[in-house]
Image (cartoon, rainbow, N blue to C red; front, side, top):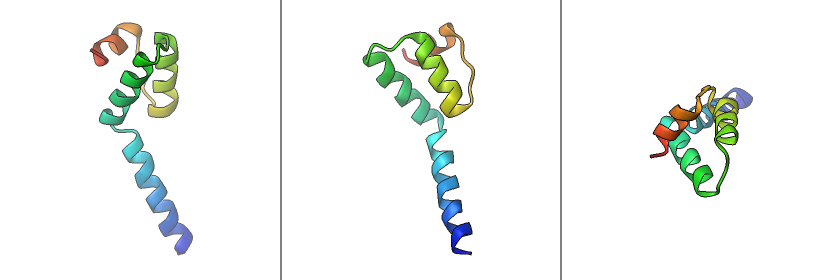
Length: 62
């Protein structure tokens, strides 16, 4: 039972980390760090499960 409860809190953390607010924060940090649009897109797909094109990424970091 303790393992189940422990996994539950990990699952909640995963949900929080995949929020739109978190994704926007990550994108803005990456842009400030000079990352390429390709790098930003790859990270969004890997961490948030969202496949975005360059124009979509640009619109989000404005």
